[in-house]
Image (cartoon, rainbow, N blue to C red; front, side, top):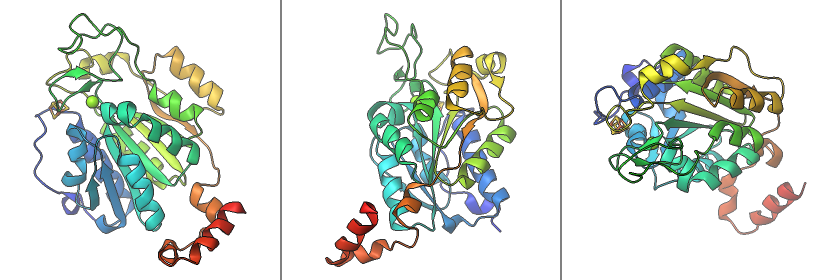
Length: 278
Ligand code: SF4
Ligand code: MG
């Protein structure tokens, strides 16, 4: 059984106090407590400070291009269904250029987890407005304040069919690793958005801000509508598992015994067609 030490990868270059340390620890803790070995996982990351997580956790991994962690992760899962696959990245990567992939993975319900480190800013490029920056937020790229409203990630995945949707906070590793354990074990697309403060560039969405404003949801809502209504009532400032549903995932619909290797020979394309047309 793996230990936290077994999952330790490259030495981090994150700023001291960055929320991403806790997110990474939460993922490692979840893997250890679930009893998996590092080689049973693939961590696929996007671009940004958060994208380094695939190098900092020792497992199979791929640091992909901007906004493409989710499609690459889906390919990894289809090619090697026995792997536990996690796509991870930041709010700029996932909810900006990667937003379309996120929506389609939600409706496809492919068996993987998408873990987003949401710091409401572009950190790696030194503090520009992101798709998650609040209305009125001031940065060097919006000196007269942000005129747009932020993407709402958790209602987006709920509305588009994701079968497990949760939100965590980097300041509460215990709750976070419990959420991540459930997300990893969920069969289908699990989306976990995590408030992960950027201590260097975001002076608004700080640990103190979240400590004062977050509300814990103790149990998932029964319906998508109830979950969305509560999230909106709390202006998105909730943590916990918000919605969970058991539904056949994409691979089950294709046929669990389907062998991707067989696609290498031409005639097997017919076999794939038959599976899809079923
Ligand atoms: Fe973390 Fe922000 Fe530093 Fe990037 S710039 S490592 S997000 S604190
Ligand atoms: Mg960000």
